Length: 153
Image (cartoon, rainbow, N blue to C red):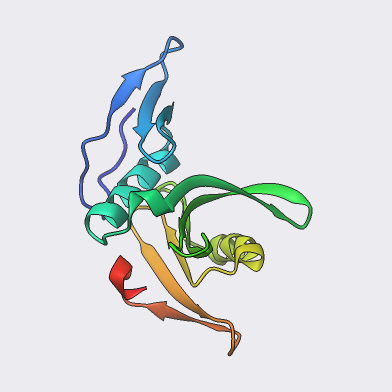
C-alpha cells in the first residue's frame, strides 16, 4: 500500500503485516497496532506533528475518543485534553488525502463540538489543514493562519 507524501513532517512509522496480509501501524496513543488506512496515515503523521513540532503532550492526547451526539455513538479522531479537569481543548478530524475538506467535514466536527465544547477545532486531510478558535461568548469561530503551539493554547 502506497500513500502520498503529506504536508507534514515525515515520521518513521512502526509497521507490520497481520495474518490476513493487512498492513498495521502502531498507534502510540492507543498503544496498539491498528489497520493502516489512508485516514490512519494522516492521523499518525498529524499526531506526530502535534507532539514533536507543536509540543502537545502525548499524555493529554487521545485517538478515537468516544462520545454520544444526538443519542448516536460517535468517535472523535483525536482530542487534546486539559491538564486541569481533563476538559477537551482541541478536537481534530482527519480525512484521507484524496478527500476534499468541505463544509460537510466542518459540520461533522461541529456536531462533535456541540457535546465537547473544545476551544479549538482542527481539520486535516494531510495536505490541507484548518484550525479555528471557538468564541462561545460571541457565538463565532476565528480561523487561524497555523496550528498553534501547545504553549499558546
